[in-house]
Length: 547
Image 1 (cartoon, rainbow, N blue to C red):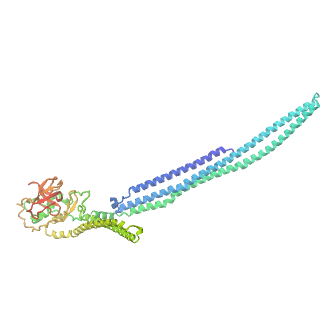
Image 2: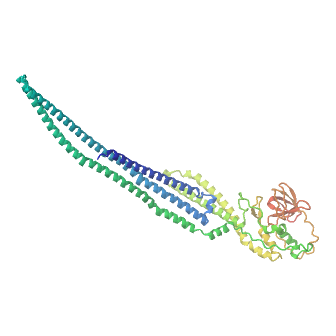
Image 3: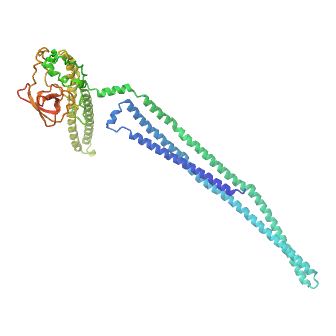
């Protein structure tokens, strides 16, 4: 009954616990929001950029699985945002409002308790005051009685004084009786109030405080259940996200990816044939095929790159990683065809887009002609003219690339047939195979450039020059050339040149991208045709000046 102070401290502690839990949930929601934000940023960071090389990578199943993982992580982040939102609305907001109501209720209960305590204390003070008055009046009445008796016994006192003392004693007795009655009444009232206070008012107030405290305990328990339930509600969706990631991982097809790589980098070249054995124990004798002037010249890639370099007949110069010519002639045939096809498709899409815009403007113009109040028909003429010019440019561009595409597709379709026809005219199949493989010349930056053979191969019977090998003289000079770029001839059969250097041409390009040159009597070899500017003499066979 006398624990108001302790109860006040305990209920305040309960409110503090509730506010601490609210703060805990609030910080959890902030963590969820930040986690979701970081997941979204992570997913966005690794998303492929539009119109970039990364988009092309997603044709592979492993990259598509990774993209699916990124998308699922984005959804996964969304579920953490849901957790934060639900905890904020169902726990933080509700508990904050409840705490305010709880504080008001607690204040009201303790106010009633203090009021009841003050009331009983006031009644007690009234009782004490009535009691002291009654005690004082009794003492006064007793003294007045003693004084009367003293006066009455004294023979020297007049009768009037005795009467006066008697009246005073009676008055004091009456006042004592009145005080007694008042004290009795006040005492009875206090006892009633005290009984009411300790058996009715205070128990009621304590009961209300107890109920309030129990509701607080129940409320915090319910909030903890909600805390778990909010997480549990998104668990199935998070599980689906993880299932989708697993499904994406299981969809990876290594065989299909390998096939895509093969298709992407397939060059269209024929592989080189076997390298013939060169018998150096008979230096003065040549086989029929080797003595052939035609075969000697047509099979120059083999003679250029003897020894260890023969296994690297094509390509032995690295491709340029930078930009190439407009017709993609720096690429191998199959790659060039794919690039040209891609370019044609892009141009056709652009043409269709321009046609759609033109049709839309034409319809708009017709509407303006029929309904002049809607707009000026002449206002779209300029745009129509501009679209017409754009269409014409795009169509010309498309025709140009379609021509290149048709040229490449024609070569690819007939590449193997001439090889089979020519192979029967030589004893060495390796010479023909190397010639086929070398039909794609290399540009100054080291990339491939496909050029058709400019000359018809000389078909001379293999036995014609059998006896001329021992007396073979150096090839005559048929022109000069100027080096456009520096070339490091690191393979056998090649010769190094410096930019700006002038040399002699002794054998022109046979369509494989190589020109045979001579610096002096002891130094000669092959250089890429695209690295030199050739000036053939007028009296040479088929002579002409070309770059």
